[in-house]
Image 1 (cartoon, rainbow, N blue to C red):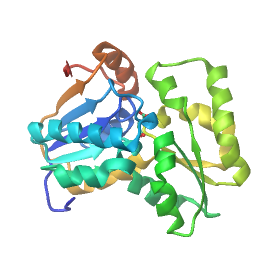
Image 2 (image 1 turned 60 degrees about the vertical axis):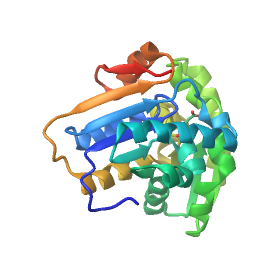
Image 3 (image 1 turned 90 degrees about the vertical axis):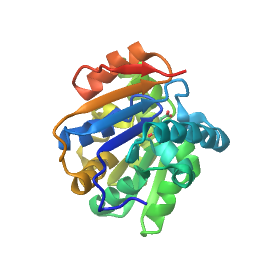
Length: 261
Ligand code: DGL
């Protein structure tokens, strides 16, 4: 289990593609001197339209990969994978694992005043309902919205503002009408679209990114004790797209990318 005693020097991150970099970036900012392995499962993106059975199989391949890499801790930087497969992954992994969902819930509980929270996420995360369940256990009213096109906008580096804003309105309107004062960015790709989201909602709604409390928590546990940074990236498809688009997200060149079979 996740332990507040361990040093966790070798840390893995996994997502279907670029989204997990929004989490990795925040962790790396607090702890620049660690050994990191980022795994982008680009051959299987989007996870959000996969079935539970498909995701369980994918999760087993991911754990096998990280078992071989002998990491200390895995950050599941993907809400879909966290919602569906976290406990299964924990049961077969040789390392500790944390996911993003509990941090999204924690931050939303601290942020909301009217106890009405919106969750925007992939279809698979919305259908799974983990966010809804955990929030409702804390007497929060929840309105969820599956934002089907958002992951594609990010992966393709879409800059068509009109097209994006049209979809933002379609997906967020029910949450605005519901009266939420807080929206959880329940997919790690979505922080990249934050300007479009805020342009639609205005100032009255606060967006929470689970990566903020997650990165603070990891920092508290691991600290930045090592004196060197080592980052390796693994992708299952399109390494050059990952390098180009990923560098923009993380704000520095991405090197050391290996394409997996
Ligand atoms: N970024 C992931 C998430 O947080 C997965 C997006 C996808 O591949 O559909 O859910």
